[in-house]
Image (cartoon, rainbow over all chains, first blue to last red; front, side, top):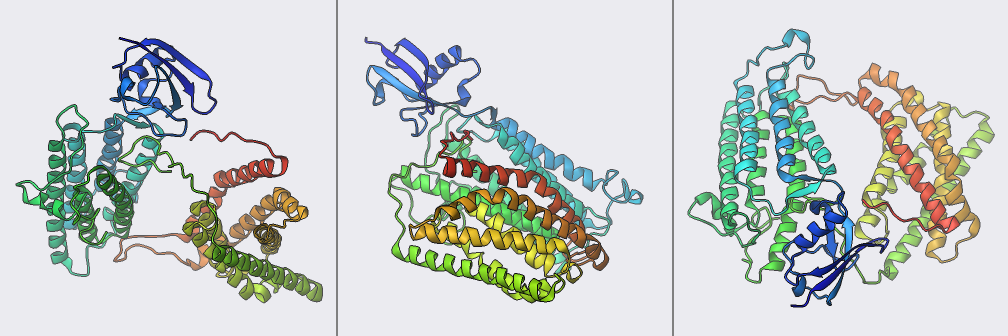
Length: 309
Length: 242
């Protein structure tokens, strides 16, 4: 069995960073990353991007050396992805914040509102309902992060945690401030009926969103990174897969729409709108990669809104 | 800024090997646009100078040029569209921020707060803007016509060194002078309780705007300095990896 020689160059400066000889032909990129890490301990595997071309796409950890278009002396280019942090850590932090922050506003902790309101409770039942819904939503997200989701990537760039937390925590505080304010005005347009309908929409979409997460989880066996087209299951909440590629986003939008209706609060409407824009961008991207990867992808599906978007 | 939930690693721009040649219509439109804007700001400059020479004071100057200023500064919004559709190769966000800050100064400060219209700080930033825009638009015009006189290139990449700080000073001083009037009238502000369950205090908003100059101004200034080194001195700058 002939062995390979692997040299790793810096993608920008083209400096020779590492030379590995006697590499097995069936070695994976992941194993090569471990070897590279030994000679450069500051670059752990998660922050290495190894490619065939300095400006090309990153190779996958599963790619096998002998199946790549290289000679017996393989040249790879390395790019530092920067400090990395695990997805689970990011999700737990960015979701834990809103859960706790909202409760601080709900219980009217000191230094938020005028001192005479400290530790008082709102007289409007919709405020209590909103707190339960908001808390339920983020609790659900935390539990899904721990027990449901199967992540494609292990890590993301460290700076993302600051960006994401600012977004989630900032909006949570902004919304919570007004909903739990002593001068909060409950829905006026259709009053109690509005709140009831909003609650139904919210709960329906929470169950829907959870159903989609379970369906997506079941597409992928544990520990694998296989990609398959999602299809409707026996659960009626998944039948939306007939019309939409990313129904998890559709249901998420629905939940926040319900919450907006329930609280009749402009900051909540803003949050819903911004989330909608971001999720649409993600849905379109996901839809495009589905179309690229699968020839037989159902043509009736739209990225996020049936027939519309 | 393309990192998404789906792709945690920094997204790499797809290498586009197609040669980007602008269509003839795009070039024609941009040339017309830049000539028109150069002319507009020249008119403004001359109107300002004429007023000052004839009246000997700057009091009432803003009022005399207000309509022309509002027209030409607002039209600049179309530059955001140019970037969005790709006929101008600049970031939509950078252009958007720049144009919006101008629109903000004109419509939400100077135009709406009559009491500060005769302040010297207003004349200061108006003079800076006029000079800068005439240089900028004539630079673009000559570039499109492929005949760029060196003095225009020189002006564009050197005058900003003093113009930029002067402009910032004029703008900040104007906003600062406007604060008491904003507080007194409670303009553009909304208080609780109301049926939208939101509040907005324009006074504190302006304070935050003023504070935001602190991180933003150096970034833009150093960006221009880097551009200057690249264009005028031919320096090759290796971009810091994001």
